Length: 523
Image 1 (spheres, rainbow, N blue to C red):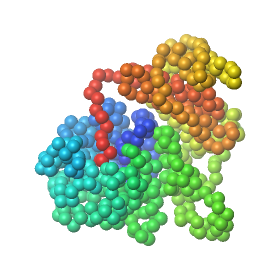
Image 2 (cartoon, helix red, strand yellow):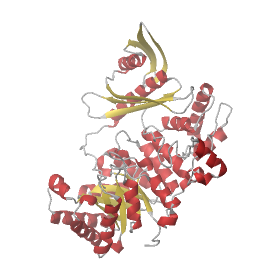
Image 3 (cartoon, rainbow, N blue to C red):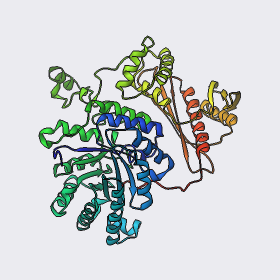
Image 4 (tube, rainbow, N blue to C red):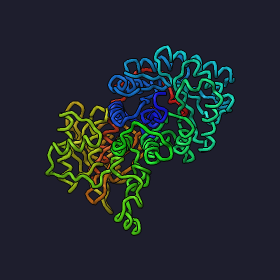
């Protein structure tokens, strides 16, 4: 290894993170996140699972073609079709990596794979060799390694390295491990696998028992030199080890670990907010490093201590992770230059046309609000990042509701052919009436599976963001819509129309294809 004290950061936000229910991203959003990850300084970006769907394939291929200076990785099961498809997506990457995985634990061998230990080793070796024939950088993951018999785990790891694997990842697929137990597994591999020095040992820990970060750090203590993690810790079930927590633990406690990363820590907070906005997964207030309360002090004794000496109650400076000391205040008198500077600081990349569109939306919002906050800007930017054709567009709406009044909605919508259509409907409330009126106009009938409203920022004039999910009968897919406005009723209408547009966009793109499920959480 070139530097035995440096931990490689393998980010799987775009693959395992996206497998978190409700966190799907379109191609434009994935590329935006990939750019931010590269700027953050991660070593490897796992861009997706190419064979899972045409959309995943195209996203991996686009990221591999556009993002430089970082390794781009694609996931593949241990079979020829997956590996070939992964290489087809990765072939134009500056630094491609194929990541193959195969379950090894007894419970998976018996109930999922129906394979013997010999067959597992044989399949793993063949798959590593096939991946190696395409590119030099190959990673192998024995899925559910933390519950695999240690003798067999040593055997399959040794065989994978002998076949050409340059990284061996030891996943705690179901978050079952403890720090002491997981460190013992890693230590045993170093002691008993004779060719272990020919590969980087990696961790991939899930947070089902809340120990993903602790397990990952424990493994680093005993020799692991790559950590697989995600922004905000998103991922299957309870999620993955959080990148920002791993990185700041190593940096803040360098006195203990003596390990470093290439991460530009001042970019952690902006990318956390970006991923939260794009996925719709809100960061809990007390989340370590990037939570709203991470650098807030309310107790009198804490405030007194902070005024006398910051280090009494803060082990990190907020500036180290990109948390601003004060909110940047943008209002209706702000110009394009100030807006561009803040957008860039938040980690977004907009061309002149996109900035002009954003500026117009910003001015409209600033007329409604006294102050426009970073979160408001993120919502406005995301509005224009959705990879959906605007078939239908809301022109105006009027609702009537109140005690003793039948809720009614009248809407005015522009059709795809440019014709303006008006209609009205009644419902259980103004929002329900709007949805029914949109159904009448568009002819798209769907079931509302999920509806949520959140305040984007604080204050009485805050924008409200509406997120909803529609399910179309006779179609096993769901479609998401999201919109924000200082008027919740308007945001509800826009979000519903966005979901309808997503349905129509998908119908336009649909082609007969084999349906392939997502992989398990293990790789």
